[in-house]
View 1 (cartoon, rainbow, N blue to C red):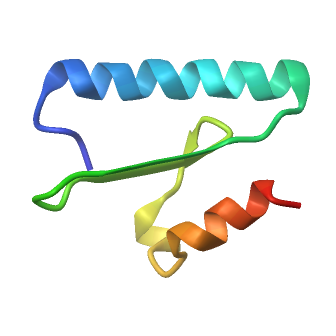
View 2 (view 1 turned 60 degrees about the vertical axis):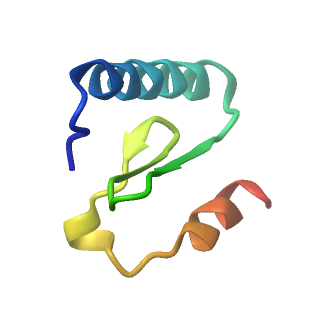
Length: 69
């Protein structure tokens, strides 16, 4: 789902790119979850967006558990 504000959409892409590069360089994993009133949400793991059409049943807590190990 694309954010209704282009600047926010671009910032999400830029942050995901940086997180992906950082994870590749350091091995440090991350989970990014953004939820807004009104229904917009974005989730990514290590800078890679979670495909909601394929993984819609995965809850945020399950994503956070990836990095708690």
